[in-house]
Image 1 (cartoon, rainbow, N blue to C red):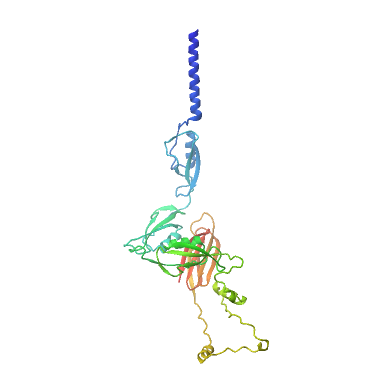
Image 2: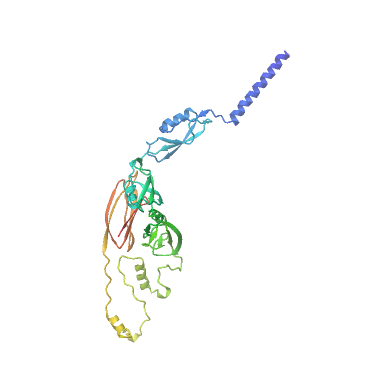
Length: 384
């Protein structure tokens, strides 16, 4: 009887130890009994079903891709890896969308290549400039993604551009950036091979606060590719503060100041700037105009000759042609024209997918036409 009792105690002890072991393993030790399936290329429904069969969970991250909508592009855990049940697996799934052929812009001048990509619905991302003795400066050597192939409509294109055989020997004309935001200016300068340098602020009422007032080197200057372009940014005037284009304090007759400001901001309406008002004449001489003193005959001849009128500046016409890329929804389209008379918005509408814009825009001197789609800078043309 005592022997049976002893064996019963041993068996009970073994059962207790085994139960404790499995309990501790269940609570504190990870049970890697699930195997991650391979879901790349599957539709989302099938991928989730495969995970559920293994006791796993799915988290979906939608991404742009030329693959069919809801196709699994990648997964964060490799297939075959052993994990515990209830583990979350992240799936990157295609949004779908338009698939377009990317044009081959190799061998084209940079401006022409960017224009062709824009017309096909693509934007330029990175521009890398390298020395190449066999390729003329400014020509496109390579592109990524390469052509020919079908890619997503919103794919960004990187370009490799030649600087010629001397590496930096090519020269670039500094564009007129007055009145443009810093983000737009940065994009424009990078696209033509220049770099934004220092940025300083100055009080000004000539252009909106936060936009470029002037550049150094100034617009029109021919500088080597890669030159730093320093920006002077306009800011709002503080109480009692004058802007750089305001006449000096001793010359601030209200009529003259208004006329000077009109000329400074390049108003298209002609304005006469009156001379500084002198002290009021004596009462008895008010009816008789004061004669101008003539010191010598040369002055007399100079005074007698009438001033020649300024020649009228001829108007030119910019032929603007732009096609809106494929869009999933309508976006705001704004077109700005900057010429010798200033900056003005010539079109501000909601644009539809593939809409074609054709305009003949009059301008004076040199003109820059800048296009913004959905608030983003997409294209710029120059006209002489």
